[in-house]
Length: 134
Image (tube, rainbow, N blue to C red; front, side, top):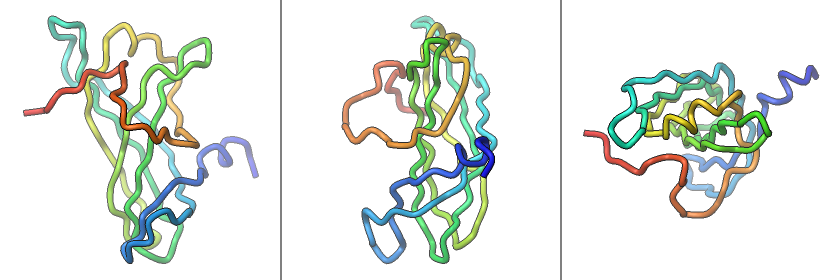
């Protein structure tokens, strides 16, 4: 399997429609993109939209939770963004989300990738401002 394809096939925690929380399945994630929706505010935060194509490789509906990582030049994660959505069996669709990211932090990202082992803490991500979009 080519390395590029192998990196997009990731095992993620998926919760099935039948309530099988904790079941492990494979989904395919590709086409990670981001776009600045609003320029920096007076606190230096950008509103950024993220999207990726996610394909359910199973034969049952799934609630997918995908975490994207922004990686800096020293190979550190500096931004973490969640994409989530319900996927029908074998369905492929674009999942999106918007969040505020500090302008300097966003500028330090050199690549975006799927986090293979999503964080399990409930702590706020210090690289993103927690704001309610209105």
